[in-house]
Amino acid sequence: MKKLIIIALALVTVQITAQERNNRQNKERGNRGERMERFQDYTPEEMATLQTKKMTVHLDLTKSQQKEIQKLNLENAIDRKAKMDARKSQNEGDKFQKPSKDERLKMMNERLDNQIEMKNKMKNILNEDQFAKWEQMQQDMKNKNMAKNKGQNKGQKR
Image 1 (cartoon, one colour):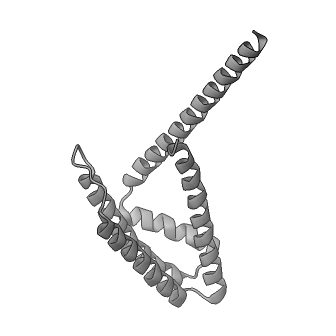
Image 2: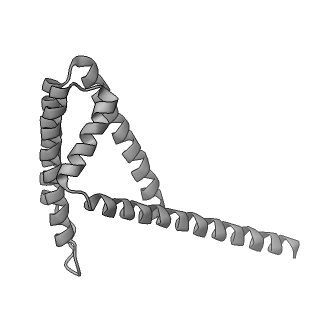
Image 3: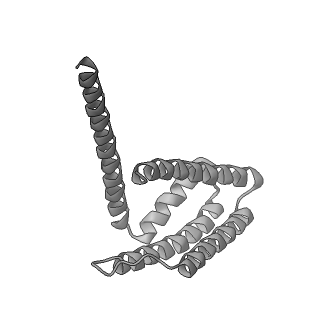
């Protein structure tokens, strides 16, 4: 009888723990959505200005570098905003469809081409030390996003 009670107690504990973890993950996803909505309120010019100022603080940019990077960030912000609006309109309502294999391949190639182009432009604007710091910032951001996505995917596969 004692063994049955202990087993039942262990099962209840496991169930409660799993529910708490699931609730925590749902809250994190909800917070991400709220952050995305906040960024949607900014115009591309405001996003580019914020990003340029952050880069100025981290990379100690000169005035001429700031102007060039501001233009580059503005172009990127306009492209991102257009793509975000297109995805949003495409995903509205019941007509949501996952992209096909060819569409995913096209998007991935486009994203990588943009990254290569951005890297070449930054290499022309920044000096060697600044470029090394910028690359490290990009790598840190990539690692942070991968870790965040890995944690979210673990909860979804169950």
